[in-house]
Amino acid sequence: MILEVIIGTIATVVVLATAIYYSQKKRTDLIVSRINSLPGFSLSHILVSTHKGVALDQSNKQIAIAVSVQDKVETFIFPFTSITGIDIQLIEGNAVTKKTGFVSFTTQNSLQEITISITLSSAEIPLFRIPLYIAIGKPDALSATLQQQAMDQANLWEGLISSIVRANHTEFDTQQPQKSLPGTLATEIQALHRLQIEGILTLEEFNTAKSRLINAQGKSASKLES
Image (tube, rainbow, N blue to C red):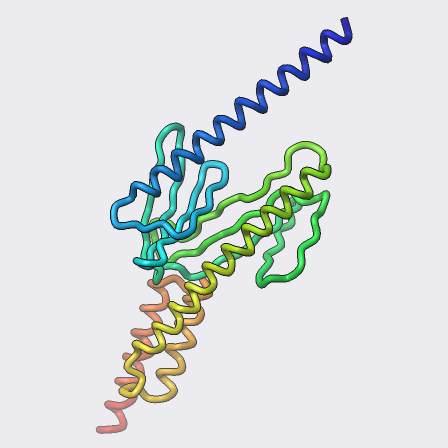
């Protein structure tokens, strides 16, 4: 009798695990298929986890974001210039540790989640989070392997997104008509832009602050001339 109960329990667990696996695979396939079918989007990198996905089009400098809801996938496309940063977050209970840079990582039994957060200068989607590892059950050798795989993915995407942000910063600096601006004004605008790139200021806040600086500089010049 006891043996039958144990066998029945194991069979139920196997069935549930199989159902979860195929449900997740179906979602993943839907997201990949939807991104591959986007017009004018040439896929170069893609990351899909749970019901979310993110992809890069290096040729056309675009990022695509996808969210699966039931059997539908909603997608959004933004230019690379909308990307302002990325964080890797290690979650243990109520504690959230942000990791930046390619520092060494050691698997942890208490680790509950590994997530990457991509920030955008978009009112539609200012922040996009993708969980790469979620602890299920008691920690074991498989948990450690999954944690390491998640961190490898997180490090890869941190490198990809960070290089885009640096390129945005360089492009902005080279496009500014700095020769026509007083030295202090150009420096202040560049400082504001760095805050916007790092996600401290939104694009709207950056533009507002920049306009105030330029207007203030213009008033000062007018007073000196008069």
